[in-house]
Structures are given as structure tokens and as C-alpha cells.
Image (tube, rainbow, N blue to C red; front, side):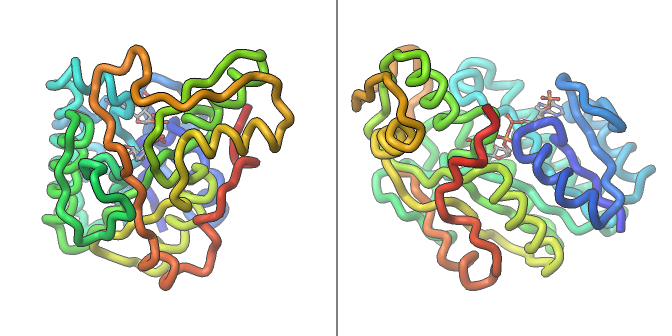
Length: 274
Ligand code: NDP
């Protein structure tokens, strides 16, 4: 089976490639962070994107590519829309032509964060442009019958809040942790869940995320676990943020827990690549 992995150079893409290449032929696509044995492509070159899919005729397409910098999306709106939404429309168009099974990754930031523990059927209401473009992207993906949209939260590997906390505390500096809640997951745990969902060929919308935790509690856990010297302070706002953040964007992954045999939800701090 041939799997086209778009976003192979990202946190999730790297972990997915490790797992999937043991079983399948993986065709990898990156944009600016070069990785071996792969194809360079900007997915906003829609003609090339569709052409590439039609010519390679993959059985499965996994899209983990996104503009993930929430503040950058707020400012560079057109670019964010093209990468997070419009490109997905073109992936779906080409998937229909080659009859590929399409897996797309979305975010807890489609919600406004007033409620928390969001289920798949809860009403999205994004409060920043990243969330809006990702919501449009998942809508394009779900317009295709043979697609699975996975909503996740706080993905970490070599980037993400836990890595920032570890590095800052290790230097003896203070971490300012936003008061809100989310459900962080390591890229490697998310990849193992996706591997299983791919084998099951699940379609529709599914939450796959970690247990609900506040960033403050998480930072304290990291400080304790690695015996780090810096301090942790809880704050209502983080300096330098342009975009609004949902207060509690945690996801309820109970449906995924029923389907999957892998433990994707326990906090996996060993999944940090430091
Ligand atoms: P990363 O930021 O680590 O990686 C993003 C990937 O997208 C990279 O491979 C990058 O390629 C690729 N990409 C960006 N722009 C383009 C472009 N124009 N053309 C082609 N490729 C492009 O993301 P993660 O692995 O952390 O996230 C994976 C998915 O999970 C995304 O869909 C994201 O929205 C979602 N998600 C992430 C969360 C998080 O906290 N990170 C939380 C919730 C959901 P390159 O580097 O080569 O340019």
C-alpha cells in the first residue's frame, strides 16, 4: 500500500513516517525543512499539488501539514487560509480522482474554550484565525465520504509547550503558564493512534488527544519530574500573543478510546525530543 504523507517534516509527520514506513511505502512531502528521500512541494501551489497526487496515485493520503503558528495566522491571514483550508479542498478533489482514503488532522482551536471537554458533535466557534481556517479545512475534508478528520490538541515533540517549559526551567528562568486547559499529546502517541485508525479505515470526525490539564499543572509536573530549578507562574495572558486563545479547549476522546487498543491519552513526557 502507498501512503502519501504531506507535512512529513513536521512533529507529527516525522513520527508517522517512522511507524508507517515499517509497513507501507511512504511518499513524503516537505516544504522548507528538508528531510531525506522526499519531495519538496508547497501545497499552496494547488495545480502542482493535485497533479502530484494524480500522478503518484496513493492509496492513502495523510495531511499533517498546516500553518501551526497561531499568532502568525492572525496576521498572515491569506497564507493561513491557503495552507489550512484551500489546500485541503484540492487534496480532496484529487483524492476523489484517485479514490484515495484521506486522513486530515485538525485542532481543538475550532472551539471557543468556554466549555471544555468538547465532544465531536459540539458546535465549533473559533475565536482566532488559525481556528477558523482549520475549521474550514476540516469541512472540506468531511465533504468527501472516504475521509477521517482527527481533532487533536497541544501536539509536542521537538516543539510545543512542554518543550518550552523544560528548556526555560532548565536555564533557571521563569515559565509564565497560561491559566487555560487543553489536552496535550505527544506526536509519537498521536502517530500510533493514527496508524491504528488507518488500518481500521475509520471515517468521519474523531477526537484523539491527551488527558485534560492546565498549562500551569503541566509545567509543575515537568519541573518536578526533571527536577528543574526555574519557577512556574500562572498568568491570564502571555506577553507577545496576538491571537486570542480558548480558555479550555480540552477534547473528550472517549470515542477514540472505545475504538483503539493503543494508549494514546496518558501524558507522555518521554515523547519530548530535547
Ligand atoms: P508542525 O508545525 O510541526 O509541522 C507543520 C508541517 O506543515 C511541516 O511539515 C511543514 O513543512 C508543513 N507545511 C507548512 N506549510 C506548508 C506548505 N505551504 N506546503 C507544504 N507543507 C507545509 O505541525 P505539527 O506536526 O505540530 O501539527 C500537525 C497537525 O496537527 C497540524 O494539522 C496542526 O494543525 C494540528 N494540530 C497541532 C497542534 C500543535 O500544538 N502543534 C495542536 C492541535 C492540532 P516544512 O516545515 O517543511 O515547511
